[in-house]
Image (cartoon, helix red, strand yellow):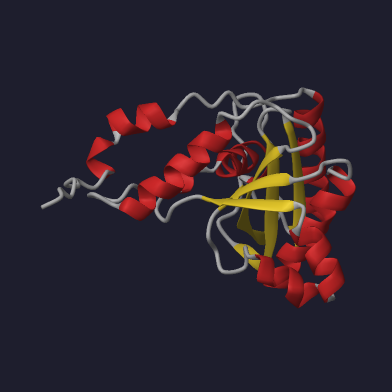
Length: 225
């Protein structure tokens, strides 16, 4: 969704994110996008009937809800790497632990991680201080640089695109337990990473100023008396 009219805050965040996407690859300062989504756990009441020659698969309309899990998606577009974490919840503490794993396990040699994310109230440096002691929180914070997508601008987050692919290829069916979601996600992540499927983002700030010109506020230059 894009705002209907001129919106300075939108274009400021949009141009910041678009400029970040144009940066050259640097393993010491990687650009990583993150997003998250809920997955409903659903169990079958009756066993599905598999497809057979001349007959489509059959699934009973009745099912049992088993709660939900949260899926954190981290993706480094230029390197073709992603990391997916499945958690019970999506609290500030859950997010903070996911970010610590990202930094310490997956990017231990990076000096700084440029993190593109939306402005959900859990996605802040303050969440680190709610999960860890001040020394640890500050250690992690010093290795992060946030770039927030604008409100109504989730399409600017490459991690949202990856979540959509994950949903279509892996999670678009009934899965009854968190453990099974984790197994499916791990297999998908491994296959996609081994294939080194990157993202060639082509939409630039210059493109935005032409194609989305209506979003830019009109201004008048103040003249001297």
